[in-house]
View 1 (cartoon, rainbow, N blue to C red):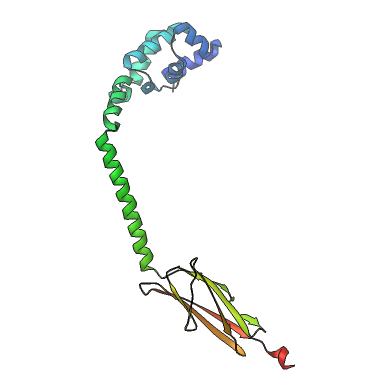
View 2: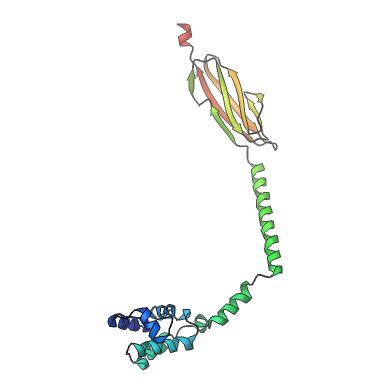
Length: 217
């Protein structure tokens, strides 16, 4: 379907005219020429400007401006007036809606602090309702070893208390803890628990087998 934009663009290309040449001849800025060729009339200053630009452009290309303007009127008949408001009115409208006043700035600032505070509060509340983090680095589960003593190494929350097989273990300022236990022949069950200040408990179990076959030979 032919539109005003395609009619003008096709004729310009057919004549081999560049947009720069058209701009110099018609005094219509290139950005407006591009808007016309794209049928983007909302980018033009107003309806009157758009109509005048189309007429001048058509005349320069040797087209019947009367016919082209008839296309233009039909094409823009269903376009709302708001979509082609003069730019000055559009800028004034935007300014009245989005202008940042001292009162609005204060409201935004207070709202921002309130959102941050509530987010922090909810984060802390959720954190307190969950069991503490507990990560065991050593030993691995189902380990078989010939060593009669083994190191239990892990990390948890800095304010949590840790027990290894019921024995209290010191938690360092970085959350890491260390404990050494004695193994007995067979499978040894090692239970590590971490308890938060609110009594939430996380636990890990490691089974370590002590292989004494070599020492018995």
